[in-house]
Amino acid sequence: HEAEAHRTDLMTLTRHVLNEQTKHAESRGDFSILLSHIVLGCKFVCSSVNKAGLAHLIGLAGDTNVQGEEQKKLDVLSNEVFIKALVSSGRTCILVSEEDEEATFVDPSLRGKYCVVFDPLDGSSNIDCGVSIGTIFGIYVVKDKDNISLEDVLQPGKDMLAAGYCMYGSSCNLVLSTGSGVNGFTLDPSLGEFILTHPDIKIPKRGKVYSVNEGNAKNWDGPTAKFVEKCKYPQDGSPPKSLRYIGSMVADVHRTLLYGGIFMYPADKKSPNGKLRVLYEVFPMSFLIEQAGGQAFTGKQRALDLVPTKIHQRSPIFLGSYDDVEEIKAFYAAEDGQA
Ligand code: P6P
Image (cartoon, rainbow, N blue to C red; front, top):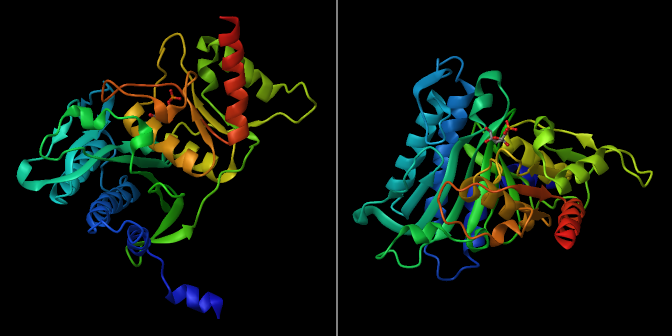
C-alpha cells in the first residue's frame, strides 16, 4: 500500500520547494517562480544534450568564450536559453555566466530580487564523447534591487540563498539546497517533472576515493603532494584509496556527494589559483557539500568564506567527506606551521 501511495503521491520539485517556502512566511512564491525558470533551462539542455549527436549540435561554434576555450554549439545554446529564461522570469536583477565576460544587468522593467551565477554547461569538453556534463548555479538575494551593482554578486559563498546543479548523464539529476539540507530529483521524461528520488542527502563522513587530475602532479605544492602520497601509500596499514577522476566537475562532485571521498582541483605552479571558478563552480558545490555534512577548503580557508573581487576569479578547491578534507587541512596547517 505504501508503494501505491508513493506512486500516486508525486513529490515533484515544484511541490517540494513550495513546502520549503511555507517556512518563509514573507515569501510570495518569488523563489518558486525563479526556480521554475532554472528548471526550464535544465530541461531544455537535457533534451538538447540527449540528441546533440543527432541534431548536429556537436562541433565547434567557431568562436571562443571568455575563457579562451573553443566554444561548442551546445554551450552557446545553453547560455542563451538560461539568460532568456532567467530574464523573462521577472525575478532576477544580475546574471553572471561562465560564457559571458560581463555580468548581465536585467532591465529595470523586468528586475527582481535574485542574482544568479551559473555555468550553463560545465565540462563541455566532454560533450563529444558522451561523458556526463552539467549546469551549476548559485543564487544570492540582492541588497537593494533599486540600487544594484557588481558588489551584489561579489559576496562570499556563505551568503548564497541556494545552490544546485543538474547533471546530464544516464538520467537527468537535479541536486538542490536552499540552506536546510540537500535533496536530489530525477527527471521523469514522461511527465517532464523532476521527482524527489534522493531526500536529505548526507555525504559519508569518510570515503575511499580521491579525485584529482594526477597529470598535474609535477606542479603540485607540498601539502597536496603529501596528501595524495598518503592516499596511495598509507603508512597506517589501511588500504590505498581508489582514484576516480571523470574530468567533469558535476559528475565528480555528484559521485563524491553520494559515495563520499575527496574531490580536488589544487593550485599548481602553472595556475596559482587552480582552474575552477569561484562564483559558479566552487561556491555552489561547496555550499551543497557543507549542507550535506562535508567540508570545502581552498588550501587557505573555508571556501564559502572567500570574498571574490572578480566575477571569473578562480580558486583551488578541496571538497568532500568531512574527515578526508580535515586530513588535507592538517597538511596545509603543518606547512603554515613551518612557514
Ligand atoms: P582538467 C571541465 O572543463 C572543468 O571545468 C570541470 O568541469 C572539471 O572538473 C575540470 O575542468 C577538469 O579540468 O584540467 O582536469 O581537465
